[in-house]
Length: 254
Image (cartoon, rainbow, N blue to C red; front, side, top):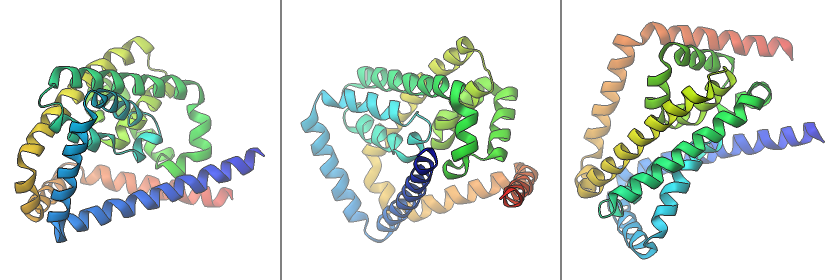
C-alpha cells in the first residue's frame, strides 16, 4: 500500500510539472503573438477583483501562504496572483493587503519549517527527484543557509523554488526556531511590500510592458546570462558535475 501511494505521488508530481511547464510556455507565446488577449484577460481580472471586494484580503493571505509551502508552493502561481491583487486592490487598500500577505507568507513558511524539520530527510529520499530537490540541490541550499542564513531566507522569498524549500532546508538542517522566525518575519514583510508595489507598477503600465515584451525579455535574458557567465560560471560547472555524479550513483543503486 505504501509503495502504491509513493508511485501515485510520483505520477502526480510529474504530471503537474509537465502541465505547469506547458501552461507557462503557452502563456508566454500568447503574450508575444497576441498581447491583446492578455490585455483582455487582465481587464477581466480587474472586474473580478473589484467584484470580490474584501474577499481580496483572504485571497492575498491564502495565495501568500500556499505558495510558501514546500512542493505545493512551486506549483501555485501565488506571486502572480499577489501582483494582480496588489496592483488592482492593494493600490486602494495597500496597508491591509500588505498585512494579509505578510501574515500568509509567515504562516506558510513556518508550517514548512515545522513539517520538514521532522519529516524532511525522509521525504527528500523518496520524492526529491520529483520536486527538483535532489542531494546536490540540498547540499547547495544547506551551504547557503549556513553561510548567508538571513539573506538567503529573506531574499529567497522572491523565487518560487527557494521560497518553498528554504524553510524545509532550514528546519531539516537544525536552524533554531527563534532565529528562523525572525528571518521569516522580516523576509515576509519585505516580500509583501515589494510584491504589492510591483503589482501597482505593473498594472499602471501593463499595456506598455506587453507591447515591448520582446525587448524586455531580451534584456532580462542578457542580464541573466551575463550574471552567470561572469559571476557564477565556476559554480554552475561544479553543480553540473555534482548533479551528474548524483544521477550516476542512483543508476548504480537500481
